[in-house]
Length: 561
Image (cartoon, rainbow, N blue to C red; front, side, top):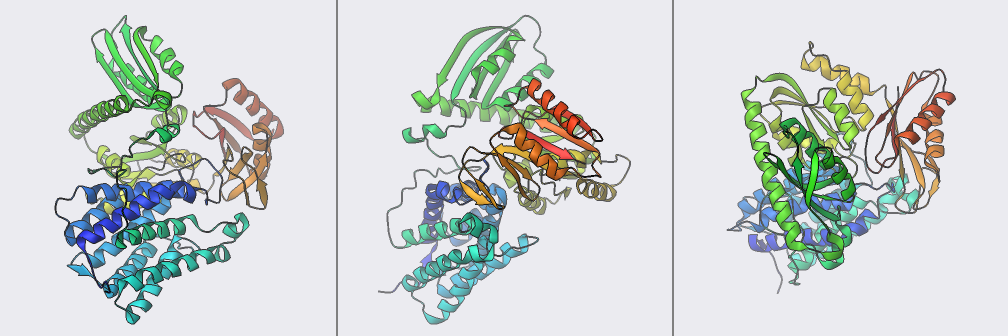
């Protein structure tokens, strides 16, 4: 017997199964990324985005179509990370707008929803590029419209749509030369197909394990299994008490927490007279201990290897405690700021690394969102930051091309403040933008000055390859050192400094006046100072300065102006 409609309960199960499928396939999708940098890849970003919506769906008491549509749309919009995640959230937003007033969905409604999804996503991207997830979404919409005229049997309709989507995906390398050169299909398009295939499996009645999706609000939490312990970001649960010999001031507490944030997460730091209780998850407990010793003697030291011992209860309790404290402190800070006079203009910047964070603070940033290449902040992170900045106009510096869309999505959701997204694609561009700020000028003049300023900055970043690939006419092997410019990979080698010099040769020209070097957490100050001196010798007519950035993943971030 033919199946002609899908009710709200079935659609919810299909959506959850689609979310679960991309979560299971995210590493396969990550491997399709053209650039082999160790970053927040497409599969990860799409999975985090849809899992945010999945949690909202799981929390529904009554799965009617209107509430289901709202949960999917709101959850994905706020949880969106990276360009692929934002585009996926827009596809879901358009789709749910088309079905929210229906009791049940038939083939015609599905076709209309696919077209609404496609149109919404295309409008969200300033310069849509074919050969991407948008192309696959467009192919799905076109084929669904054709099929809806031919059949009302969803058991024939759905597999035919998926088959066509896979045909379109297979053609993406012919549309984007960079995909053909790397020998891969578009990762975002593959991710979209995995969502739909997961949904179709639920439609067929297959049993889906949804244990990874927990109800609630905010980002999804994935249960940690024994086989997944290698994926724990920070491996050592570190606890101790500082016995202070003098008052532990609020400024010292704030600075210590900021330092702990740069080397780990799940942080608790509670001061009570002459005792400070500390908890942090980190990959180097020694760094936390060394800094703590500057405040006093240590007691009750305890370090557990979470990867080895897999102490789930310890992890859960610590994270709950850290989350509770963070929420309390955020509310306290928000209340304090609300009492301060409202500023005309304020700044939010995305940054990671103790040194870079401090540079932005000194330049006047009101709020720093920890993240960047290794973890793209979500739209929700942007909204929380905007809420914290007590200003009429808030400038956002994304400092990464994969974060600009999330910032713009947050802008569209804010009504009570004027939000201006300066499309900075690198940290040096962000630094130049905030330096260009003129306190006595209005918001429009400042926006123009910052946009003009970032055009003068050429950025180079030195990191390592995480997979074999062929891109920008360069053969790259896992472990190679890469020098990446604004428009692609400029140099590949086996030595950090040699590759950095080769990259600089592509960036410096006769108009260059300044080279700024920001060295990362894996580079010693002496090495950076020596390298800066060598750069000065290579370019005697250009000013060279170097700063501690403390950024992970990237040995050096450079700006040429």
